[in-house]
Length: 332
Image (cartoon, rainbow, N blue to C red; front, side, top):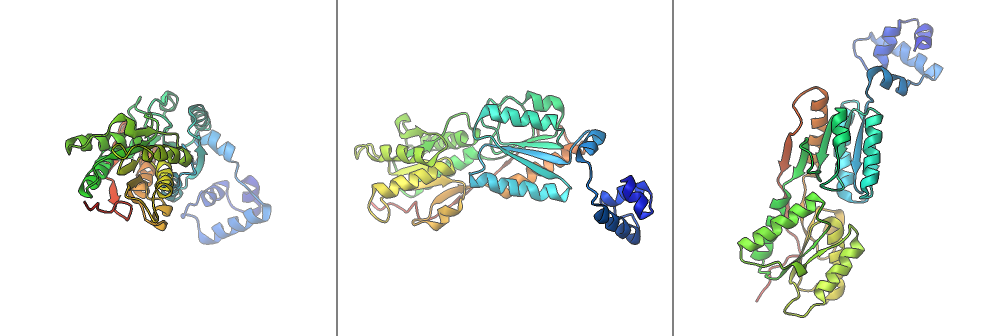
């Protein structure tokens, strides 16, 4: 920066203000500094700036699986707010691995990032290291229930209730569910709301009709095939899939098990993935307000960095049920 100031014939303070984006510098001086920066090939020392300011202009976003479209959309929404505040993103995918998750969180804290957004791999994820560091922190979509921290979530219990109500209204009476491991809060709460509402409207969901599978479409497909292979009096007439991978697998199994174009097995998925609108029949699904979730999570980080609000602010957004062709009304 001293070289730039010398060559441009301005003060070091002027160079600093121009490089930080200040609009208080005379336009001609700013142009002269910009031309000198380009001529000398100047690049800022990010490490030095972190050491001086004790914080990086970066947020760490730690997510379970970037192959899931929901999380890609979430990153995009977070980034919009981040860019508006001069923040860049460092995105990590844990692959549903708790050890890898802890490694990324530790690196974020040690790197003195300006904030962390986490969708936890488990409701038992240990956040002590992050919270003790004082780093602005927000959970989104999935939560660790060991700590009370800022978070933005969909009302997943309500989502499960909407699925149960729609099946009942369409005259389905033998529901089943393709779920994942119980330590993932978002999908577990959808299952909880689904079973609770079924009991209230007089339907039963026995344990043998709840299939828990890994977060892979092929596992959900195999589980669905086993459900549909049961005797007619035990076979479900509708299936609720609590995540996008489960829905994809269930859709494949239902289509391959029945007559073209689709058997009389209703299907409700979770997350409005593009393929759900492109296939025949199109898939009824719970849609999360993903853009709003990402925006609000980012705004929480900005507020925390400004010293606004204490830990523990929770925002719970309503789900919506997008009704399509995979849940036709059954005719007796």
